[in-house]
Image (cartoon, rainbow over all chains, first blue to last red; front, side, top):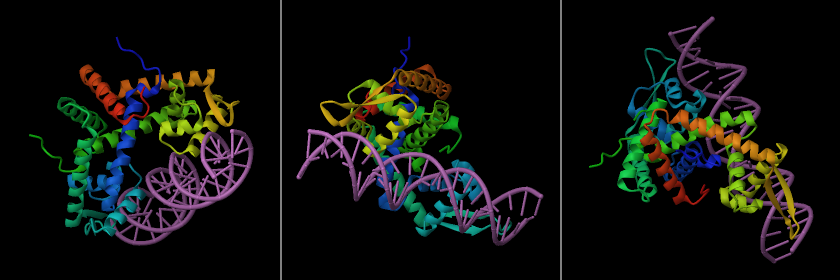
Length: 148
Length: 148
DNA sequence: TATTGTTATACTCTATAACTATA
DNA sequence: TATAGTTATAGAGTATAACAATA
């Protein structure tokens, strides 16, 4: 028999929300040393994973407004992490591709996230940790966005 | 042997961040029907759980600026969900207490979150769901804030 | 006329700092 | 002088809508 929570704080929805927002803030703090924000990392990841090249496609894949992709891409280009190339076949389209510097930054961002994972899950057993990875993957897959 | 993620998207940190932010947005959408936002619900929950009465204490418990507690409390008072009473012993302090209407709203907010939990975890087995609850509780306890 | 990208604008959220009342 | 609360202001983040170039 399942006991119902007395307040929303006991629900998965609120716990997931609070933990997620907290963890994203922590990650943002680490990323600042690279001049990146979490959204930059997600955009770079989407490019490396392939499947989205034009800015409109990226906006749809990330679930954000196209105008935000313009801004994020501007900032990433200023860092030398991506290059914009006009599609010769359709000159309206800008195709984004990750530069060597972008690859390096993304590798560093990955390392920072892995370190943060280790710190965050230090209180968990190895089994719990593996289970958490597996379960979050299922939930993410159900959302469709950003299949790794 | 653990395989390292090729991009940050494969890490717990980023998955937790993305899922948490998404779920919070969904919850905010449902709460709008009650005139509430997630932060209101967390403040009300903190009051019901006890341990924080003055606005300063609440700010510390929620990890937000005191000025934000003022704003949230103003909005909750306008909804009739809380009442402010001056502490006679120290007239600088405002003690917040949940009204009957606030109790009702908090119960409704809990029901909405429980419904959302069910929808969100429909893709999970009962065992996975139980494991997720247990593991998130451990992570939340490690953070200290908002023990249910 | 429709679509891609861009720019202009506005709104939400939240923090910092200045201020008031009380101690 | 120090503290609880409040108000004023500012910045970050993101969306919507108008616009330009190309199809």
